[in-house]
Amino acid sequence: MFKVGDMAVYPTQGVGVVEDIEVREYSGHSQKFYILRIVDSDMKIMIPVGNVSNVGMRRLIDQQRITGVFDALAEPAPSGKVASWSRRQREYNDKLKTGDLLEVAHVLRDLYQIGTGKELSYGEKKVLEQARKLLVTEVALAEGAKEAQVVQRLENIFH
Image 1: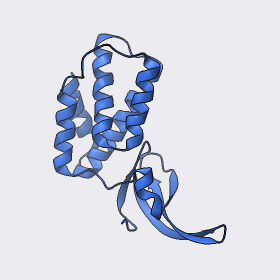
Image 2 (image 1 turned 120 degrees about the vertical axis):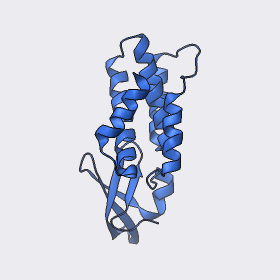
Image 3 (image 1 turned 90 degrees about the vertical axis):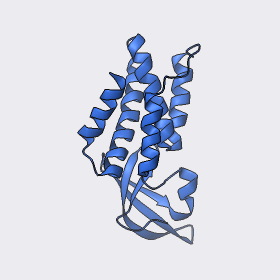
Protein backbone atom coordinates (compact mmCIF):
# COMPACT_ATOMS: atom_id res chain seq x y z
CA MET A 1 0.00 0.00 0.00
CA PHE A 2 2.77 2.46 0.92
CA LYS A 3 6.31 2.59 -0.37
CA VAL A 4 9.47 4.25 0.94
CA GLY A 5 9.21 8.01 0.47
CA ASP A 6 5.40 8.13 0.59
CA MET A 7 3.69 10.55 2.95
CA ALA A 8 1.09 9.07 5.27
CA VAL A 9 -1.13 10.35 8.07
CA TYR A 10 -1.02 8.62 11.44
CA PRO A 11 -3.99 9.59 13.67
CA THR A 12 -3.23 12.01 16.53
CA GLN A 13 0.43 12.27 15.44
CA GLY A 14 0.03 13.84 12.01
CA VAL A 15 1.84 13.48 8.72
CA GLY A 16 4.86 11.26 8.40
CA VAL A 17 7.20 9.94 5.74
CA VAL A 18 7.61 6.21 5.20
CA GLU A 19 11.36 5.92 5.70
CA ASP A 20 11.68 2.17 5.44
CA ILE A 21 9.82 -1.11 5.27
CA GLU A 22 11.49 -3.61 7.56
CA VAL A 23 10.94 -7.26 8.32
CA ARG A 24 11.22 -8.00 12.02
CA GLU A 25 10.84 -11.25 13.84
CA TYR A 26 8.67 -11.50 16.94
CA SER A 27 7.88 -14.76 18.73
CA GLY A 28 9.21 -16.74 15.80
CA HIS A 29 7.04 -14.95 13.23
CA SER A 30 8.35 -12.58 10.58
CA GLN A 31 6.33 -9.44 10.07
CA LYS A 32 6.70 -6.39 7.80
CA PHE A 33 6.64 -2.94 9.37
CA TYR A 34 6.43 0.56 7.98
CA ILE A 35 8.89 2.88 9.66
CA LEU A 36 7.13 6.24 9.71
CA ARG A 37 8.94 9.45 10.71
CA ILE A 38 6.47 12.12 11.83
CA VAL A 39 7.24 15.41 10.08
CA ASP A 40 6.51 17.79 12.98
CA SER A 41 8.16 15.90 15.82
CA ASP A 42 10.77 13.67 14.14
CA MET A 43 9.27 10.79 16.13
CA LYS A 44 9.52 7.35 14.53
CA ILE A 45 6.63 4.91 14.63
CA MET A 46 6.65 1.24 13.59
CA ILE A 47 3.35 0.09 12.10
CA PRO A 48 2.77 -3.53 11.13
CA VAL A 49 1.88 -3.52 7.42
CA GLY A 50 -1.14 -5.72 8.10
CA ASN A 51 -2.37 -3.33 10.79
CA VAL A 52 -2.49 -0.13 8.73
CA SER A 53 -6.28 0.05 8.38
CA ASN A 54 -6.83 -0.85 12.05
CA VAL A 55 -4.69 2.05 13.28
CA GLY A 56 -6.16 4.46 10.72
CA MET A 57 -2.97 5.21 8.80
CA ARG A 58 -3.91 6.74 5.44
CA ARG A 59 -2.68 8.78 2.49
CA LEU A 60 -2.74 12.59 2.52
CA ILE A 61 -6.07 14.21 1.84
CA ASP A 62 -6.83 15.12 -1.78
CA GLN A 63 -7.77 18.58 -3.07
CA GLN A 64 -11.48 17.81 -3.39
CA ARG A 65 -11.69 16.76 0.27
CA ILE A 66 -9.69 19.82 1.37
CA THR A 67 -12.49 22.00 -0.02
CA GLY A 68 -14.99 20.02 2.06
CA VAL A 69 -12.86 20.47 5.18
CA PHE A 70 -12.78 24.26 4.75
CA ASP A 71 -16.53 24.27 4.06
CA ALA A 72 -17.05 22.39 7.36
CA LEU A 73 -14.89 24.90 9.21
CA ALA A 74 -17.08 27.75 7.98
CA GLU A 75 -20.34 26.08 9.11
CA PRO A 76 -21.78 27.10 12.45
CA ALA A 77 -21.23 24.52 15.18
CA PRO A 78 -24.33 22.51 16.07
CA SER A 79 -26.25 24.53 18.60
CA GLY A 80 -27.75 23.17 21.73
CA LYS A 81 -26.68 22.57 25.27
CA VAL A 82 -22.93 22.53 25.65
CA ALA A 83 -21.83 19.33 27.35
CA SER A 84 -19.39 19.37 30.25
CA TRP A 85 -15.75 19.82 29.32
CA SER A 86 -14.82 16.26 30.32
CA ARG A 87 -17.50 14.84 28.05
CA ARG A 88 -16.58 17.17 25.16
CA GLN A 89 -12.89 16.33 25.64
CA ARG A 90 -13.65 12.62 25.35
CA GLU A 91 -15.67 13.26 22.17
CA TYR A 92 -12.95 15.51 20.72
CA ASN A 93 -10.22 12.98 21.45
CA ASP A 94 -12.31 10.22 19.85
CA LYS A 95 -12.67 12.38 16.73
CA LEU A 96 -8.93 13.14 16.62
CA LYS A 97 -8.14 9.41 16.97
CA THR A 98 -10.11 8.62 13.80
CA GLY A 99 -7.46 10.41 11.75
CA ASP A 100 -10.23 11.78 9.53
CA LEU A 101 -9.38 15.40 8.72
CA LEU A 102 -13.07 16.31 8.52
CA GLU A 103 -13.52 15.15 12.13
CA VAL A 104 -10.42 17.14 13.12
CA ALA A 105 -11.98 20.18 11.40
CA HIS A 106 -15.19 19.73 13.42
CA VAL A 107 -13.18 19.75 16.67
CA LEU A 108 -11.31 22.87 15.58
CA ARG A 109 -14.50 24.66 14.52
CA ASP A 110 -16.34 23.77 17.74
CA LEU A 111 -13.51 24.96 19.98
CA TYR A 112 -12.97 28.17 18.01
CA GLN A 113 -16.68 28.94 18.31
CA ILE A 114 -16.79 28.11 22.03
CA GLY A 115 -13.75 30.38 22.46
CA THR A 116 -15.63 33.35 21.00
CA GLY A 117 -18.13 33.18 23.87
CA LYS A 118 -15.78 32.43 26.74
CA GLU A 119 -12.15 31.93 27.65
CA LEU A 120 -11.05 28.39 26.79
CA SER A 121 -9.64 26.28 29.61
CA TYR A 122 -6.07 24.98 29.46
CA GLY A 123 -7.32 21.55 28.33
CA GLU A 124 -9.52 23.08 25.63
CA LYS A 125 -6.61 25.17 24.36
CA LYS A 126 -4.40 22.05 24.16
CA VAL A 127 -7.00 20.14 22.12
CA LEU A 128 -7.55 23.18 19.89
CA GLU A 129 -3.80 23.48 19.23
CA GLN A 130 -3.48 19.77 18.48
CA ALA A 131 -6.42 19.87 16.03
CA ARG A 132 -5.06 23.04 14.42
CA LYS A 133 -1.58 21.56 14.03
CA LEU A 134 -2.91 18.33 12.51
CA LEU A 135 -5.07 20.23 10.02
CA VAL A 136 -2.53 22.90 9.07
CA THR A 137 0.33 20.44 8.55
CA GLU A 138 -1.65 18.02 6.42
CA VAL A 139 -3.33 20.67 4.26
CA ALA A 140 -0.03 22.49 3.70
CA LEU A 141 1.76 19.29 2.64
CA ALA A 142 -1.15 18.10 0.49
CA GLU A 143 -1.36 21.43 -1.35
CA GLY A 144 2.36 22.12 -1.47
CA ALA A 145 1.65 25.36 0.39
CA LYS A 146 3.36 27.03 3.32
CA GLU A 147 1.83 26.43 6.73
CA ALA A 148 1.49 30.21 7.19
CA GLN A 149 -0.83 30.32 4.15
CA VAL A 150 -3.08 27.63 5.65
CA VAL A 151 -3.08 29.44 9.01
CA GLN A 152 -4.14 32.63 7.20
CA ARG A 153 -7.07 30.77 5.61
CA LEU A 154 -8.12 29.57 9.08
CA GLU A 155 -7.83 33.08 10.49
CA ASN A 156 -10.01 34.39 7.65
CA ILE A 157 -12.71 31.89 8.56
CA PHE A 158 -12.67 32.40 12.32
CA HIS A 159 -12.04 36.13 12.65
